[in-house]
Amino acid sequence: MFKDKKFAKFVAVAVVAVFLLGVFGLAVSQSGTGYAAAAGASSNVGKVNRAVLLQQHPDLAKADETLKAEFEQAKKDYEAKAPTLGEKERQDYYNQTMQRLELKRQELFAPIQDKVDAAIKAVADSKGIAVVFDVNNVVYGGQDITDDVMKKITGK
Image (cartoon, rainbow, N blue to C red; front, side):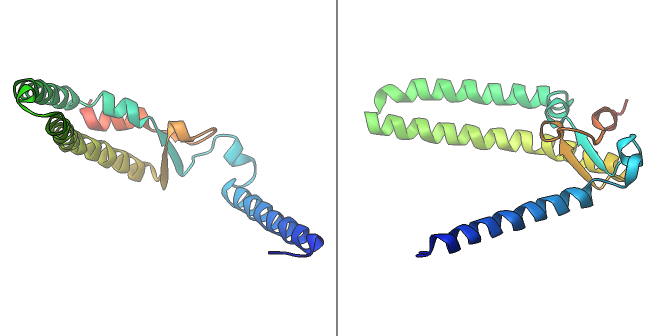
């Protein structure tokens, strides 16, 4: 594409320079002002351990129980029907059963995820937090609201 190696090198260096300036500008604009942000002043960025909130949600046990019952029934149905099917039909039936179980899992767990997300939003709004990240995506900083969200979910 570029016949002149000097020109290609210049373009590459220019692209890198623009990228680095953009990253630096973003870092400066998001870093807060002065020492107050570093000293632990109130932040408008929150963090939450969403996995813990989902695992400890009161509705999770019932959803797990229902899914296990669905799985057991699907297993019985498959074991009863599979011997009468050819290899391709057996594989197709297995795939259909797994898809049905995945849809059932989504159906059972989506409302729990929605409740957790609604509780996160409610707590964040009440604390004036504009953005909430999962703790796995935060290296440093951010106000941890996991306990407050758990209280909102459980009512305790």
